[in-house]
Image 1 (cartoon, rainbow, N blue to C red):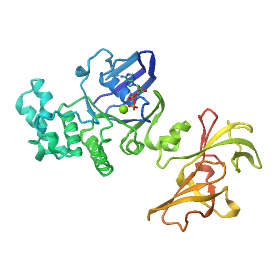
Image 2 (tube, rainbow, N blue to C red):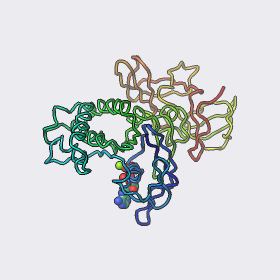
Image 3 (tube, rainbow, N blue to C red):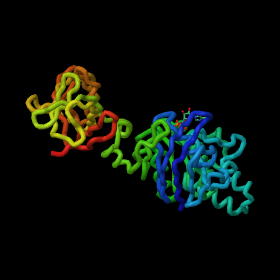
Image 4 (cartoon, protein in one colour):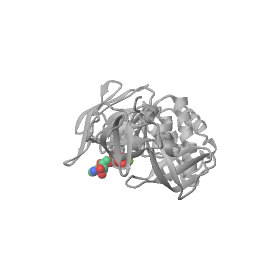
Length: 362
Ligand code: ADP
Ligand code: MG
């Protein structure tokens, strides 16, 4: 199995640098997801690894060997695109076999590989069809099959599910996870969808504007974001983030925003007068009594889904606050509500957006 490493990789188009020095290690057999907003450099980074783009400086290593000057076809990686990129005039079988035939592999070996991949992807009955006679999901399977038959050192996926409808995306997501478990190969997967990232990844790499913001296991990113960007990006619905001024409080500090002042114990790294951002995940906000509330809000909108409830709440001078509670709550639009914030689950970031603490002690 294959290990991939990037060392201080930079990439410019003309005079514009779009990848600003990325260090990254993808372990053998790891499912690594690059995630970030549109234009942050995910595809560029993937194409750099594939050998479809050269780099301005730095190094790319595959299994310890620098491959900067190795061509895409000699890197032994297989890429699957959002657009499928199938040959319309060829059958499914031919689409999958074509690359192997070009490499002069013996026919029985090609047949065996295509059959095996087709079974794995449940497309055996479509092998004789042309792509236009397939659904979007089936076409994407063929594109994945074409990668599998090559027995690549690693699979590179660029938003492979983006063209599929929501329901099919969920199905294909599970199948991809199953595929990784079956094949066990190294996979790099690009998406702007943080739910895909959370559910598929062994390791998530969060990118923003050509910089690596944080990488780690999905729940580590969720629980201990290192900056405001990652805090706001990972999690759906997103973390409530409120910019506040720090003041003196009765038992330490006070976070002042709008008409709200929230008392917290003293925290290393924050002083009265600082600007900070505090974050609360929707599921960590409780509905409270008037006498132990942190804030009074008005419910702008309530979504009763049966098994769970989402409340969108307004308070003067604050961004809208999302509350997520299991079960059914007797709450409706326009109602005033008292909320309390669990200090142990509160995230604090400094004026530069860097984490001060994930969870306030004591
Ligand atoms: P993502 O895949 O995360 O949406 P991309 O990797 O496609 O982002 O693009 C990253 C940045 O590089 C963007 O600002 C984009 O405009 C720029 N870019 C990508 N390809 C080219 C190119 N061929 N020429 C000039 N700029 C490019
Ligand atoms: Mg892209």
